[in-house]
Structures are given as C-alpha cells and as structure tokens.
Image 1 (cartoon, rainbow, N blue to C red):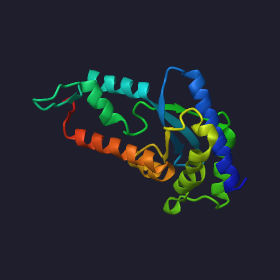
Image 2 (cartoon, one colour; image 1 turned 90 degrees about the vertical axis):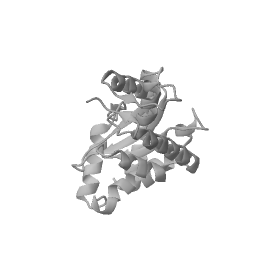
Image 3 (cartoon, one colour; image 1 turned 135 degrees about the vertical axis):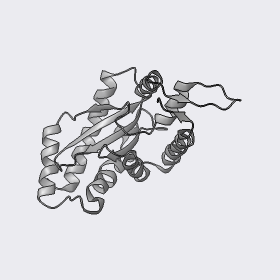
Image 4 (cartoon, rainbow, N blue to C red; image 1 turned 45 degrees about the vertical axis):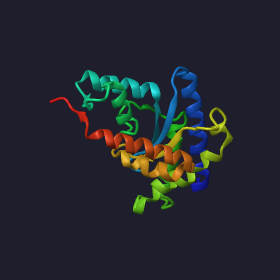
Length: 200
C-alpha cells in the first residue's frame, strides 16, 4: 500500500466510524473529529467531541470545585463558562475515543509505510500526511458534509498530548470559515483562563 491508498483507506474508515458513532449515539451532537497517531509509528485511532460530552466534562469540573470568578456585574454560571473554557482542551477531556473497525489492518499499513520510508516523523511528515492527505479532502467529500453541509465537524490530527497539535492541524485541514470560528472559540477560552479558579 502506498501513501495515496492509505490516505483513501483512512478517509473511508473515518467516514464509517462517524456513521457508526451517529447510529450508536443518536442523542449526541458531534462537533469535532481527531485522528490520533501513535508515538510508536504503528497506531492510529480517533476521538469525537460532542456537545453532550463537553457538558458532562464541565459538570465534572464544577463538581471537583472549579469555578468561574465572575465580575460583579456578571451572573456566574460556572458550568456554562467552563464549557467555553474546555471546548478545545486536550482530546482527553470529554472526547469519545474509538478504534476503527479495520484498526488492525490500518495500523499495520501505517507501520509498513514507516518501515518503507514513505512516512517519517522527521519535520512533521506524518502529521502533514494525516492533515493534508487524509483530513483536508474530507471537506470536499459529500459523505462527510451530507448531514451538515453548512457546518461539518472540525477535523484535526493529534498525538493526544498537546491541544495545540489539534488546533495547528485543524487550521490547515478545515475550510477557512470554520477555522475562523475555531480560533474565535479558542480565544474566548483563553480569555476565560485567567478567571477560572481551580480547587485548592
């Protein structure tokens, strides 16, 4: 298998995974999809962010004692503010993790391309492959946009350790209006950061 064939196979697997997710969780509203690469060069999986998962996570943070330090003129809705703050946090905060139906074969294909030198970790080659060759074409795939042509899920790549990985790749992989929306939400979260009081 070569890079274009693997890219197509990953796109097909992503579309199938999201369709299965929607079938299995019809009450959830996904807003983001993260393709996750393993540090060991032989692993790919995914995570899906949903509005419901985000609200659950914010409620957990409130229960643990996180608070929004409101100005005197504001009404302090801690859960709502924490929802804004956590929206683009690391994909281990409220995202639904999953493995592709053909995960073993996909992981084996990734490993072989690394072994054959078609993919490397040098200078972000693997991240660029996942971003430019796998995720970016989804914006033109009618299977991806059919349910929400006006607002498809934001896609990005991450190794799972740093939320900036997802944001960096999502900036390249998504249509520009969605990128503006993404960064607007991220800036609002950063503005709130100074007013989030963590439990002592």
